[in-house]
Image (cartoon, rainbow, N blue to C red; front, side, top):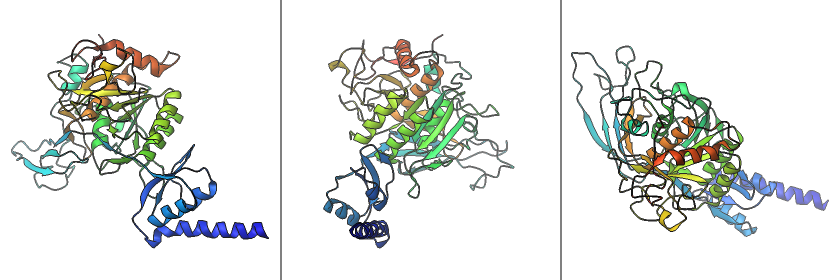
Length: 432
């Protein structure tokens, strides 16, 4: 009888706590609850389950109730995508007799950094394009300056490589309807849905950042050959939507996506996102993915030129931290710096920058099937991810480690001699 009463009481409590979000006690927030109890997972509506507990959306009442019962509850850290600036440029061929006029406007960025956006009209009516009389949007350059630099060829007309390599882009989603990306589509997951923790087949990008990053990794110019080229156009790009349309990303969504990627055949993970916060959820997920042989690449951050300014997860030694250079092959002022001069030379340690790749005024694919010019270490990171795909060491015992070491061998000094704070091993270029 006692056990029955106890079960009844706990069942009532669970149902009550599950229904409280509808009672609007207070605004909800994302929290990590440190318990492995199945009861609390059900009662508080677990979102992602980890070894030490689970994440959940809790309102004020649920939070207080959990604390009363002695549960350890903490807020989930928030990360964000890392563009320094954005310029959107749509180029549409019109009838020979027409002359397009530019429309320039200022809009807020997807993160806390301002953005300048230049938009050209989509057609002569200024409305949504009618595919019957508007031709395909084309980039201003099929092989932008960043591609010329990493391929060490100013006359390059196309790129190559990446076949049978799976790269996951953990970002704001990817627009695989873009003609330059439809041929490289891999799997597609949404970790940001408020309804379901992981939605397969859903990864739309209303921000644009993730689509831009994916294009740098592996845009293939489209079936018509008129679009832009990424570093490794034969790659398979999987979209892991871990950031919302506003560019903000919860650490539990990122951590869950990392673990999912590690368990599902992903070779390279690109994370053009970051935070000053050292999240235990992400740190644990990084360790897990590293143990599974995943090569993780991340933007170092846009907090330069200050020493020791690398964001997480790039600051972890298990993750390749990438800084940014401009078209003059110089480190940008805003690219985050590491601690390389205080650590052992040419040995990757926590807080070290590892490489520097093109990151300023980078043209790539955009959310509306057009193209955009963005700046930031967010753009430099996918150049390295693309190179990793191009040179993936399939035959090695540990392909990820071997690929990382091979990229070290391809790198050349940029800023000073040796393993410096701004560029680490240096700029990686395609070997002849």
